[in-house]
Length: 476
Image 1 (cartoon, rainbow, N blue to C red):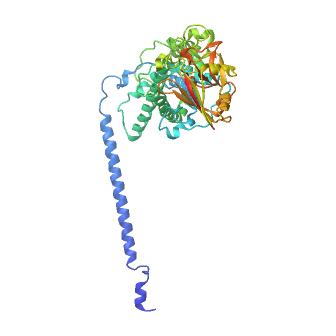
Image 2: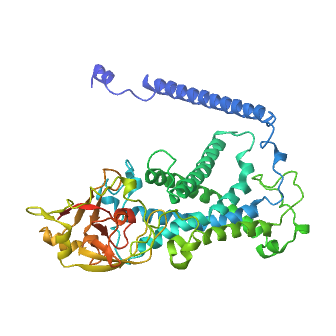
Image 3: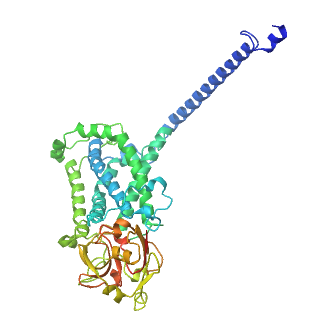
């Protein structure tokens, strides 16, 4: 081969390319060394800044270590309250998600008041119609348990409140993340419980829809709670095992002592003399929860216990007689007047072919059926079984030419607004207890109960049992 050909081929080992690669590797090493040096200098600077900041004395008040002096605070008492919440909060979350599912959100925005929910609004199953008291049970548990846990939540916050005032508030990036998670946990808990309690009383002082706010708040709080459990579960178990609960609850005031110092700083550095035993603290919280149970559960259980439901919404029982059972919204409150439901009222039924139009007298002349069903609302209250009489939704679907209807759009005469229209699923239409009710307990519906016609479906949230119905549109 000629010399010129050899020169044009790949460089031989030890040629000019070798030193070039060597110099490149040296430059990379120098750059890496310099980067590590800069990072070390930055870390040293941050550490020095943290040390200097740590020498700044805390401001007066709750940031001072000696401010919190209760000798009862400590990991054991905090863990006792935490153990209750460890079982209670997940049950609240599950029953809350079941309440969301009961609205059949997969049917669209008419049923789902949580826009832009994305993956948070996953929907796993069609809400069943049996047993008829299903929503009454799940929502009753959700609301009653939420109220009962309020004293436990407040006691837990009291037991860890020194953690909220640690000095410095932020010591490092890792500490900043911990503080952010704590803010989400505490803020989420306060927000969810506060909005839930306001909703029970039908008091909407917060901006926007309760459903949207409570839904997103539940996911924020639920995520923060899950992270908190993962990070603190072992420590909670160790704290619970560190002291005998029987011995601790038998300890009198004279022998009540602070717990040993803990790394979380819950135990006070300068404890005051005890004024209550830990038994008294746990008993007070338990008595508060029991009292709230007594004044709340009756709104869901009904019967004689309803008279004890002091926290139930007031002025929601429209007198005695066949229509004398609980209501949520009156006709006047949503703008329904006698003119809307007078002699000119008609029910229009859409399906295949020409729409069918009925007067109320014509509806009463059709074959009617009865069903004993309760009403249960998102606020936690419910009625006993009421005896409804009217037309089966399945029969109306057949009249409309859609005997195998998979959904029905139910529209009210009330002015447009939340839940003035609703969609029901096929399983709800074809349950023989699902009615377009015309009468209740042997009498015509009152206006506040939906005269001249309303929907009543087993296990359906009360707000989806649309009142003052004037149009049904069945779809295959």
